[in-house]
Image 1 (cartoon, rainbow, N blue to C red):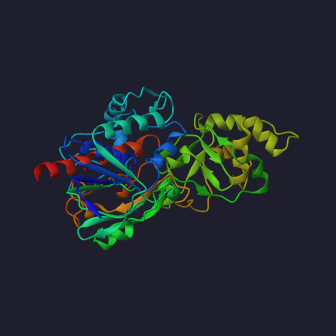
Image 2 (image 1 turned 90 degrees about the vertical axis):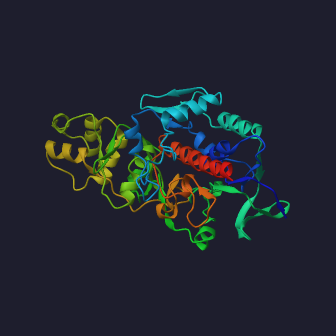
Image 3 (image 1 turned 180 degrees about the horizontal axis):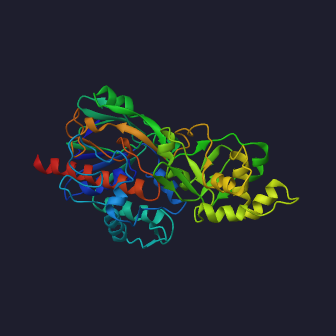
Length: 403
């Protein structure tokens, strides 16, 4: 069966809903097809820890965190810009959320959250806005292929075929597949001639086989450290888990570590090496090594990491300080896509026009984590998804207006 439709959005996550919002217009028939029973499941999962929408910092600094942000072979603007050069960055994201009636606040690090620290109120208001604009959300509609110039779906009511005048694809990447981002779209687009880079985990932890003495620290947070990878520094909190190391401080530098860079942990980033050496320059006496280190560092978790990764142990205060300021982060590789918060890889820049239209499929645009870019958590990733959804939706709307 087929039915008339002006615009089709496939995927009801942040990028897809933003595209749908851009496509709303009086008399325009817009359908959003979502494979899952409810929309934006990954967005809701992220919101359980507070929903970090964006981050207040100078725009060039913010943009520098978006790797692969140039989405066209031509130098025509950054990931956050639309085809006119207008930017949808942190300030615009905040104004958009406040326009939905969501009160925001920014923490000491510049991270922006809803006052209620939940995603669900924002999502409810957002869904009400698009529904009020005439958008028809279809749940359990799974896109299964291209057929006769249209888009074929498996639905609760049987197969459906849609022939929209413009389409935005926002099906996500390949992380957290149980929430809907299963990359099942890759063979469909690859078969249509769209170049897709293989997916890799992003914003993920790293596998570590811990020694027996470390078992008592499973689940313990690691606070007050800095992880240095080249010129990148992660200062956020992270966690020792049975699988390895995870958390925001790791995710800030995860891409560089995944790509082969070595990492060092500074256990006392707020002290100089000289000041730390003076702390180590105290007699150990009859104390065990662990108890002596606890006196020096004052944190049993840091001591445990120093004992785990610090061998061979130094024998003088300066060497101990140097080791604690540059402790090798030893790991056995990144955790897989099933545990990653996001993914790298996807539709390559060469497959896209500057307005995110697929070169191989005229009238079809793509947004969000389907595209080959990545960003750390902390507001960067979600802002990028919203910006590309807006950009693709605007371009699709312009195509409809021109026909």
